[in-house]
Image 1 (cartoon, rainbow, N blue to C red):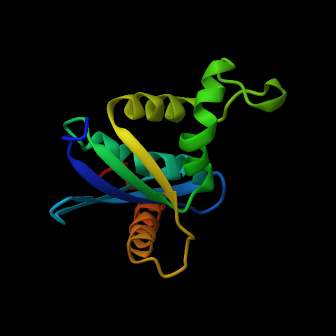
Image 2: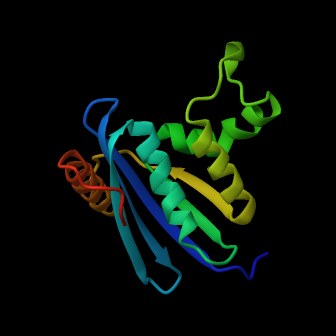
Image 3: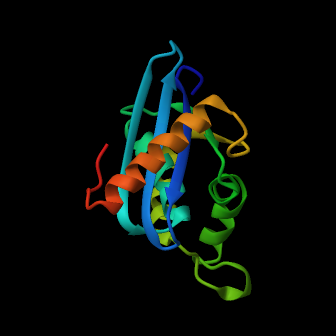
Amino acid sequence: MEDRPIFTLYTDGACSGNPGPGGWSFIMRDSDGEETVEYGGDPSTTNNRMEMLAVIEGLRRLSDSSRVQVYSDSKYVVDGLASWLDGWIARGWKRAKNQPVLNRDLWEELDRLRRVHDITTHWVRGHADHPENERCDGLAVQGRDEAARGGVNHS
């Protein structure tokens, strides 16, 4: 397990309206400092879906099982991966008061990916001069703006 590649994944999502046009982005850095940077957008989505999709798209780019440090300014994503996901699954994808889990399709994909990769999550304060978070924010906004103009999902 310890000989798996190590990556750092910085992510962000953006949305105008909720729902509305949205964008996602990630910066993936390997242990040698090499970066992969991608972004995309959706003309009608929510902020939480874009935050989740940023993590999913980054993890999907890894061809081998890896150890990944995920940095996000989304408490929803960080807490969901670190604390809530196992409970939701145990309760049949139900939240408190027997309510269905929102964005289940994306949570199911994150669950699948966390079974492939050893993921550790870290929350960072958004818009607080964290360099990678600021870069991701700018790219997510670019993806959102392109989606609002009729662009399609891309990376």
